[in-house]
Image (cartoon, rainbow, N blue to C red):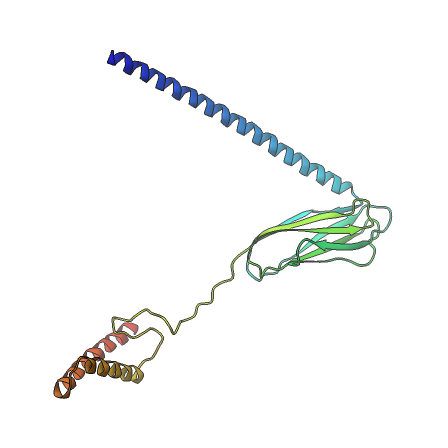
Length: 231
């Protein structure tokens, strides 16, 4: 009986694993097919927009620009070039950006048929982090307004390397803070701290003088060792 029960459990467990495995394969196939359909749709839409833009009266060479990784405070300027495919001059009436960090500029004179023009966009690269901004171009063209987009990531501002006078790193156990004083100032500082310490312990007279001298000698040895290491 126990063997039969074990066999029964084993078979059910094996069947359960097979079922879950098959279900996982089916789900993976569904996700893969869905991803292909989605990618195809995106590509078709992009191609359609490109064809529409090429046939438009105000046709841009590119509707978007990726700056990629940008150095902090670098030049954030990019030129969107366009062609007037209409049979009449095109006048740009206004250009609006989605953020004050993006400043557009454009030609104020009419763009004659067959001629080209430029919409210049400048992003403030003193703002660290990722960005995705849009600019709308309003004109007398039939396809007005035209939406342009920029994206990228501005790297963080390089940190200034400074020696802190309040550093808590001690050198060779001497109690001297890095970047504070050196030479005679250190000796005066050491003598003062030793005198205070010995007086606090209740010593006086000859005992105080001897202890002070011993501690001073020990400190001078550590200071000499410190200077040797620096050299």
